[in-house]
Image (cartoon, rainbow, N blue to C red; front, top):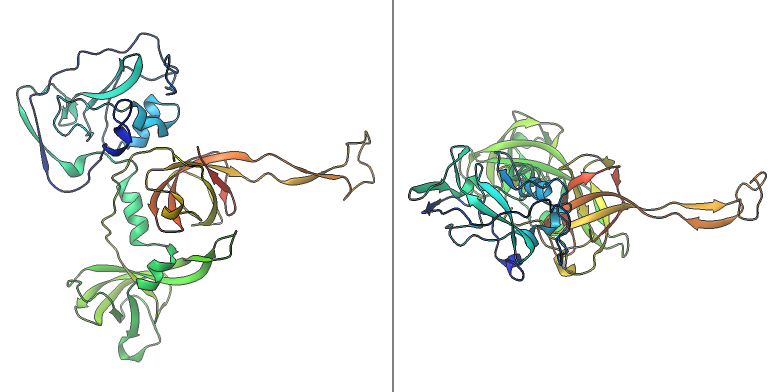
Length: 375
């Protein structure tokens, strides 16, 4: 990531770690947006939104993606437009109530924190001191969406499955268990009493369509329970279930501390990937999860924004010789229709050869086999 023109990509950090930050002696920036300039700035490749405002007050519930779309036509240009205000302590963090200002520096559009907000409103804080929990800083995507998926993972990378804790037995020699039953799990010996876990049944394999290599598995949510007796094995009480729990089912912490300290940005290398798994037959709507057959070894990382295209169908041209097509069913030269752009996804977890991505925008169904590429 580059700061200003060259170095923001590696510096901007949106922290969700617990703690406090002190912001003192803030001064307003003596910079203003150029009147009427709301497209690509002269000498710049940053496509601003035609309706980009001069200022924007960050709202509770905003994400970095939301804010990027306010100012940018393509949100993955965020690293190119973000400008750190050196007058502000911890300037990389953005909080609800902060005033973001669109300015021009050497003719280039830049976005910066002009004022820190307080209590949901805005005020200049010089010469006051303000204490702000870091956990309130906005993130690139909703933390709770990612944490919920990771706490009940139903698309699993193969090493996740291989190393995950598992149910070894049911109390009283039962073969299956449901809500109200006690079960025994191995691999969670450090868990405390009342700590909660999700039970996931491992289902169909997920394979790379290019090599047929095993990359992961789909999972089926079984239920959840809490630790009654710590140890190895630990005893859990199942408090809810949607299907029978079986020996060998995997166990995952229900509360996951997930890392969303990244910003939307485009890959620097060419990406040629495929959607290899979805949580449903098809995906429509923001914040659905898909799995891709590319990972960190292919250069993918959290924050990468990727385009998704539906594969163009192959049809037969029965009209190329001037006929009306009558009586030529099944004949004619095959023609490849163009691929159609259907959405955008953002990578939030990259394994070695597989990634999880969140759907950010979609105009049509995203399906298994859809093409994934640079935005």
